[in-house]
Amino acid sequence: MPQLVFLDIAMPQASGFDLLHNLPAINFEIIFVTAHSNYMTQAFRFSVVDYVLKPVDDELLREAVKRAEKIIADKTAGQN
Image (cartoon, rainbow, N blue to C red; front, side):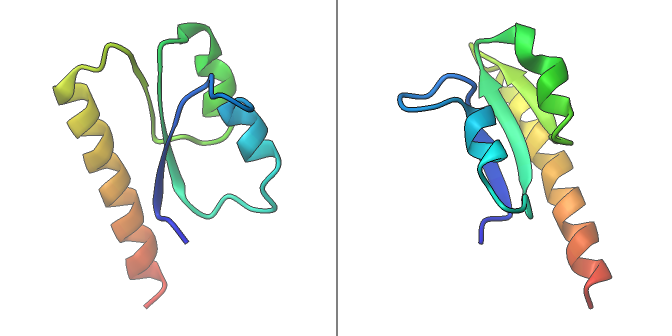
């Protein structure tokens, strides 16, 4: 099971939201990386770690990944 998933809004067969809606459970952290700024509110309803707009700013992406790593580490520590 993945701990972190990077998703786009627009994908070839379905949207990132379609994928999330079709999962029985979301047991991983999500960072949306997309060119679609108008879906940000909808994305945060899934408790995403971050919403990074394309073209991707390297520093913003690094910060998002660091936040995700901290969340994952906190969850993992709570399971021990």
